[in-house]
Amino acid sequence: MKKVSVIVPCYNAGRYIDRCMESLTGQTIGAGSLEILVVDDMSEDDTRDRISEWEKRFPESIAFIPLEKHVMQGAARNIALSYAGGDYVMFLDSDDWLLPEAVEHIYEKAIKSGAEIVGYLSRNATEYDSGDRDYETGRKNELLKVIDTADRIKLLFTGRTMRGCWDKLYKRSFVLDHKLRYAEGVFDEESLFTIPAFLDVKRYYLLNEELHRYYENHGSTVFNLVKKAEHRDDNARTWFELYHFLKDGGYLDRDRIVPEALFIQNYFNRSFLNNIPRGLRYDAPTVKSMQDTVRIFFPDYKKNPVLMQMRSLEYTERLMAFDTDSGDMGKFEEIVKEFAINVGNEL
Image (cartoon, rainbow, N blue to C red; front, side, top):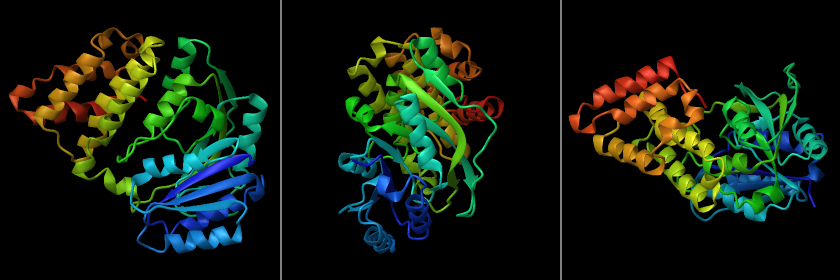
């Protein structure tokens, strides 16, 4: 059995996939310890040819999974998960890369700490440098044992985690036991996977090393989708699906204040904060529907002790109280923009 399965979804990644594969096959843990699952989501460039060449060079480590139709990143990751056989699993976007020591350091911390999830740090980069070894931050690593609600709040609301999936290593048995999966058909798919993981994890290790390089690719799928009106509500759709997953799984019957605070901050606040500053407009019926959803799902959210400690609650209340029948959506947008300037996203 391989130590780590690394899942890499690709779509028109011909310009970037070589450096991504080079960073993985050059890991100090050894390519033989890795199962690299590369999923091509019906690319229209030379991505498939490039992946095939890498698979020929490393047949014991790289498995190429070509899809027959374009399904977006969430479904591509879910498909790859069904093939994964490593003790641990991690995710890497095709235009990003890892420093050579990354998997070895992360895996060793997982083994020694017994953590179900190991988080690590990322740094933005504009150029690939195979000689980059700059990962030290001077900050101490931390093992967080999650025993009660206070520990869960500390994990989720103090900057120790992010909603993204690409800065974490997961024990694969943990993923299987909790039936973790990504939302499909939307660009903001990761919360359906990571939030239940955070609500179930008992041992979380934060490795304060910048082992991941994030390439801000203005040609990437996500960068372009977030500017399209038809994907304006993808975040809200994911969190709506997540609510029902949590409800059906009994998560709302324990530590209710945690998923409640997360839902208000993400389904409601984050949807508007992400979109309105980008110029994506909201109509009154959509806003009213979202207001009604919050009132139905969490009618007493104003009493939530986590939210009561946040500066954003004032703006949440103003957005919830906004009279959509007034038709003055410009006023609604002004509140959101003021929210973004004065508070930003607290999660």
